[in-house]
Length: 132
View 1 (cartoon, helix red, strand yellow):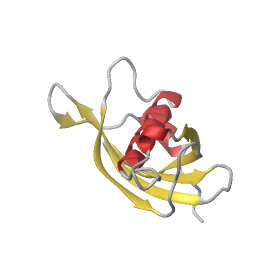
View 2 (cartoon, one colour; view 1 turned 90 degrees about the vertical axis):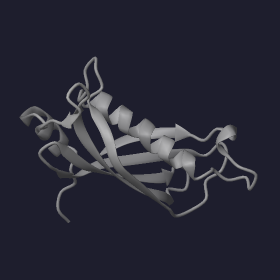
View 3 (cartoon, one colour; view 1 turned 30 degrees about the vertical axis):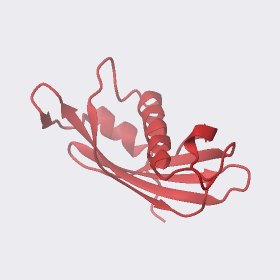
């Protein structure tokens, strides 16, 4: 399980006073980048693309709250992996959103997906949850 914290800024709220739904995707992206960095999956050149993403909004979030994003790998394929992210309001522990994404290793020169290395797969597997 990978964890990342985000503090909600005032500019991320809308006229209704809660976080605008678009910002949840920014929070998940911020957490994904930290995940890639912490696992050393990228070097000097970025080699991943986001092929698909979705977010289920469960509770409203407001300015100055801190979100704890817990991320884990769900499935590892040949050149891609499925990534799940649960966003919790840190103080209450309430689940506020659930995200899912498909991430593909990609060669920007040839414009095609490329296989994950065995080392990458092993590192990703270390962040899969055990079967429940």
